Image (cartoon, rainbow, N blue to C red; front, side):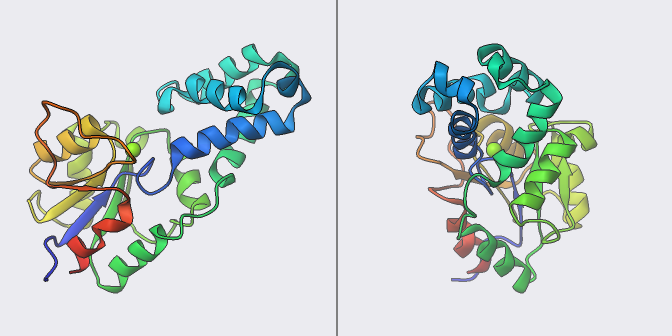
Length: 225
Ligand SMILES: [Mg+2]
């Protein structure tokens, strides 16, 4: 089978790495690291609370730190110092996903242009890219804070296409986990879409994506044939 698409754009969080899993694991690490957290909560509770404070990234780092220190003041760090700990630990607490780098290296070996389009702060997203071994694999990394617009804004998709040197077309596959930001956003600019389900079901009443895959690595045949 020849490849169906000539280029790809990938979301970062919960697509190229398991951000949700990393947040939960960081909650457990808080519990392991600070006696004050252990005195107040079980490991399961610390994991659930930290994930709830994070709101799947929507809370932002500052609020996540503030909520964590409000819940467990005995940690005894400044918000800035805890943020530093969090940034380092959360990106490295999970082992590397063995199937992500082979996919991206395979695209490079086959000269399939690809890039990353991610919503989030510049510092945090680039740190993720470095810590997860993705740095230098593509020259096209578009971060919303730097772009001045966020998915699903068409502007951020256009910036990424420009970087790839590709027009907006159905020949370009956008791969992501977020139904609104990734799938609807990419479809609106005329791209094809592959949804990384992460164990979820596609929501009722929303026009389905072109492809659904349980894990990002499963888009390989679509891009490599
Ligand atoms: Mg995502």
